Length: 273
Image (tube, rainbow, N blue to C red; front, side, top):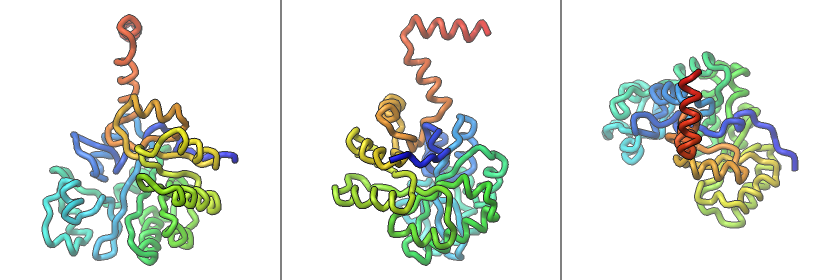
């Protein structure tokens, strides 16, 4: 089956939650985004949540477990997390971010792509988030066409009836049953969903081949090891979701991996330029 061409998968790496920064992850903030850009990333994942006042914010969540992951000091008032309250929080001492900042970067960097991970529990909420995505990105098709919208099969139609995005992705949870694996693949093919997110622990050659045979791209999540990433990419994986790897970091890794004589020659040529 011919592969659906998706330009974001020309990138080896996707920065998870806009990328890790200063040893921290799950940030979804401007500090992480700026750092990832400086390291050569052009493909980013961002998590989107609704606040209690029905505003959309980039976040991995704020219940007690996720607040701790994101570096926020949990408070019972988070049960009524408004946008204004969210923007007052610190993530390991760093500022949170609103959607207008994300929009600005999408305008300023026309060659970057975003995967949207929509955190919603009902069809109604999913549709509401989708409407807010259109609003926050000003219905700008030049931006909307650079979004990869991750949709669980049970939520895909709630998104698509609000707006048909150019690029969709669905995902397989860790260690899926054979039945579920087949169902998700068939659903993706039937609905023209171009990529599958696959847990790194399930990324063996057989599973990769099964997905590729359907003409689908494969995003493996989440991995922070260049050697393992290189192996998976050679096996047919399209892109690796990562906290710490980057195009710039890969170049450094490859230079350090050279045999001593080749390394010295490379350094010498670099100095002589």
